[in-house]
Length: 101
Image 1 (cartoon, rainbow, N blue to C red):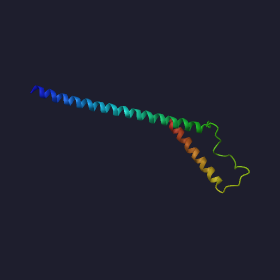
Image 2 (tube, rainbow, N blue to C red):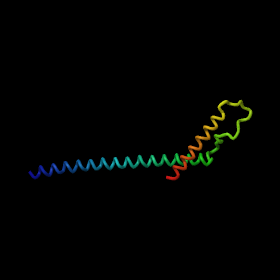
Image 3 (cartoon, helix red, strand yellow):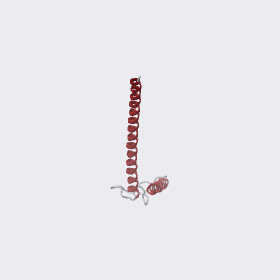
Image 4 (tube, rainbow, N blue to C red):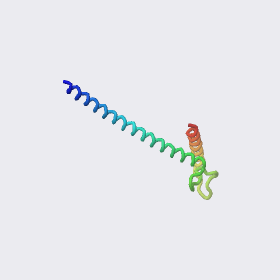
């Protein structure tokens, strides 16, 4: 009878070891996923800051100061410009909020 009890306890200990391994692998996967998300967030923040500071490599300003010369006037030019200004302000505000965290 003593042998049967020992066999059962071994089965339970093996099962608990397997469960512990599964949990450890799950935690490790979650940590890796979180690290990947943090890395992606940092890339996005760096890119937003680069854009907001005007350091975008070899890019012209998206918001023209005046209407383009020698081109026909567009009827919605001022609306597009106003919309781009609004978007840039929203992006700047988002960068500030991200930096404050």
